[in-house]
Amino acid sequence: MIDFEEELKKFHPSLEVEDAEEAIYNEDLTDMADILIKIVEKAAKESEE
Image (cartoon, rainbow, N blue to C red; front, side):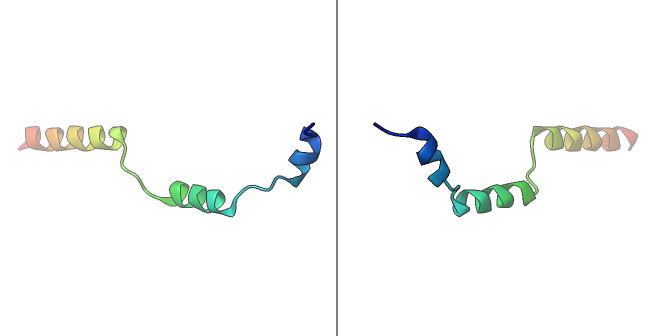
């Protein structure tokens, strides 16, 4: 039978996953909120002209 406690002691997270996580968090990604802000700013600037 598998001893889960013993198996958990052997577990080490993959370095590849940690590296990917860091790269994702450090990446400046544009999301929908950023796009909407740009649209509103553009519309406000055009209405001033």
